[in-house]
Amino acid sequence: MYTVMNMSKTFEKLQVHLDKIMAFETARSLFEWDDQTIAPFEAADYTSKVIGIISDEYMKALINDDVRKLLNKLKEEKEQEQLTDDEKAIVKELDKTYVQLESIPPEEYRAFNELASISNRAWAKAKKDNNYEYFAPYLKEIIEYKKKFAGYRAKKGEEPYEVLLGDFEECFKIKDLDIFFDKIKKEIVPLLKKVSQKSDTIDKSYNYLNYDIDKQRDFCRYLAGYLGFDFNKGVLGESAHPFTLQLHNHDVRITNSFIEDNLESAMFSVIHETGHALYEMNISDSITQTPVGTGASMGMHESQSRLFENIIGRSEAFWTPIYDKLVDTYPDNLKDINLEHFIKGINKAEPSLIRTEADELSYSLHIIIRYEIEKMIFSGEADVDKLPELWNKKYEEYLGLTPPTDSQGILQDTHWSYGEFGYFPSYAIGSAVASQIHAKMMEVMQFEDYLLEGNLTPIREYLKDAIHKYGATKNTNQILKDITGEEFNADYYVNYLKEKYQKLYNLK
Ligand SMILES: [Zn+2]
Image 1 (spheres, rainbow, N blue to C red):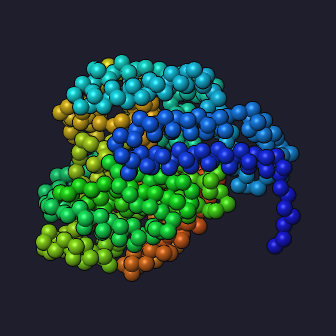
Image 2 (image 1 turned 180 degrees about the vertical axis):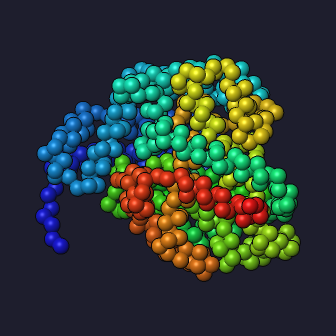
Image 3 (image 1 turned 120 degrees about the vertical axis):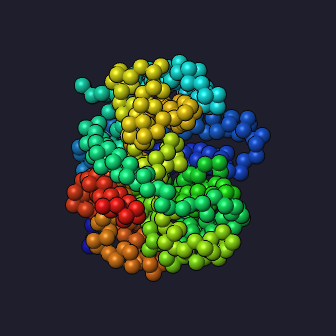
């Protein structure tokens, strides 16, 4: 079909600015990657000056009168009529950034950033010394700033916490999350109790033997490639904590980190990050290097990493074609561990204190605790000095454990120390979205057969066409609705967990 190109002159002018904005953004990302992977220890002082200048230039290119005028014009109806859908999405996304950044007076923004870096250091010290009281005054100040900043943007009657949640996931309001999390509490808390009573029936001691790191490195690289990570468009590096970072859809970088006496840690990290990477690699060329050339939201991104890590990566079908290769890599440790034993091991679940080490079943309970406390902080129901007690009470209630120290309790996560409130729910949303998508895929394709054959191409192609290529031009609920015919529905997640763990632990 032939369509008349109806290029918007105003958008063309904006494009020139966008190219510059994205170039600075890309340069900044590249330094961030370098800083966390191979930069020498003593580089920090001089390099941070370079990064500071690039960041300033980025902000100047982004927020200025020229861009503001173009943006305002492009929001007018007669201009909108001339835009393609991608261009409309870019204008919308840029406008969101403007509203966010321009709502805060620059001097307050600067003061907050300084406080955040001091507070982050105070948190690290408090965690090391197990001293919550030392951190509390900083946390109070951070919270006051976040309340104030949210207030600048809040619509009439809107709660500050609602605004913060919206920064990470626009489709989920407090009321949606309350329903979602109540469902999980009702179903998963009792299931976890039953499972933990039988946790002795699963042996996992093989996982903590000595696993040569060079061999782990090779096997993880193999896993990334097996899943479809394209080494012509991506790099696999190493850092203290695994992460994914994209410059554009032809340069996506992931990292891994290795622990000598833990076989699983690096394997499931690389599967997780590859899930993120496939998303970024599959974003369409027409929107990469634009403000919508990335995942739809934090939750949507996490759905892809968790689909690969948990639903695919911890399934028997996935390991059937490749388990022998793993045994051949470590014959001394694994020769007596058959596939069935291994599958039980990698799915073993029991309540624990630390979120980042939690298994698939108990993970969302850690998130609910943070969500409920954040909600209470921003509604004024929680006294910041008494947060450790509140935290411990909730761990006792949902996981049946009381943290022996605050370092293993309320001080374990870094997020709050620099004001990242409203982010945690994205992790749980990701797991639930993954289950909803998985349920649909089971319906429309021979999902398990493909895994058994070691043919992941149809699975990847499906995700590319249904989700990845759109980047952030659609939001989470639009994507779900287009794939499954309904918006977010947590039942799929609850059913998936129940079915999986009842089978694994012979529960009825
Ligand atoms: Zn992730």
